[in-house]
Structures are given as structure tokens and as C-alpha cells.
Image (cartoon, rainbow over all chains, first blue to last red; front, side):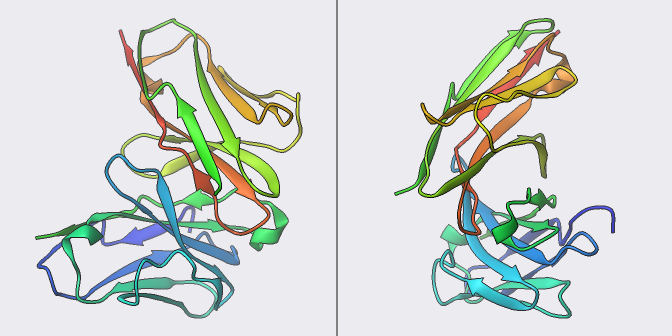
Length: 116
Length: 110
């Protein structure tokens, strides 16, 4: 597609439920990144994919968070047993080559997650 | 710990004014510095700066990097209401993650 596409754009759920957030990167981009943006905070790195592999998961805040990427394209971020502190905007980005090539990351519109 | 600090936190100007946004960084194994504009949703890529002293320009926006003093500025001349946004600065170390500042909120009034 022309840009990074994320769905849903908004998600409201009850505490304790599981949620899945989807990211479709720019066509042909091999690198994919997830970030989280909380109110008043900068963007916080969560995880990086090169192809289907995740060489850096260091930003995932707890074992309730997981992500996968299939076919070198679409990625899903899953949050299990959601907590109120998980409320944030989850942003996905992609770049044309792996992170070692110093390419700009291009972002999607994000999913605004609200935990009641 | 890597960090990026932006100033001012917010700025209110009138159309036609020129603004300068500041970004200082402490990033291990620094490679480049990026500027993004965030209106309602996606941060939109503006500039990537790798070399010191070389100005990058796009229309009324320009940016420069000083790797000795570890800062960058983003200039916007002849501001318009459409420039109203949060401007994000990010350091890119020799890893995969961008290190973001908290942004400068710019409001341009007619």
C-alpha cells in the first residue's frame, strides 16, 4: 500500500481482556517497528522485526505483550489480560531496509487503545 | 541512558512568524537525527540529518545538525496555520530503535 496501515484505529476494551492490533507496512519494506505513545510521553520502542524475525524485543513492557510477523509483511501486536496502564496509542513504522542501513522509519496512524 | 530533549515544550505564534525548535541529544553510537511532524495521527517524516553543518531544506522548513554540541534545530519561516502540530525529534543510535523527545507543540494563529 501507499503508507503504513493500522487497524483498528480505535479500540475500547475492558480490563482483563486480550486485544490484537494489526499493522500492514509499506509494500516492500523489510523492517517493521512497534512503538507506544502515552499521554505526555515520547514514543517508546517496543519491538523490531527484520523479515519475520524479531531480533530486538527489548521494549516489550511485560510478558503480557507479544508480537509476530508473517510472510515478511503484516504484523500483529497482542496484549493479554489488559491493564489500565496499557492505554496508549500504539504506532507501527516500517523502513525499506533493516535497521543497520540507517533509513528513516515511516509511521502509520496508530491504534488508540483505551482500557476501561 | 540515551535521551533526547526538546525545547520549548510549546510555542504559540502568529502567522508569518519564524520559529526555531531545539533538540539536544545524548545517544550512544549516534548515527543520525530525525525530525517528524505529528498532527492528529501519524508522525510524518520531515528530515534525516547525518552530517554536521549541512542544512536540509524543504520549502519553508529547514534543519541543521551540530554533532560537536549534540543538538539540532528545526526552523520554520513564514509560519502558516497548517504548521500547527507537535514536532518530534528522534536520535538514531547504531541499533534499531529511535529515541524520541517528548516534542514541541506549535500553535500558529491567524
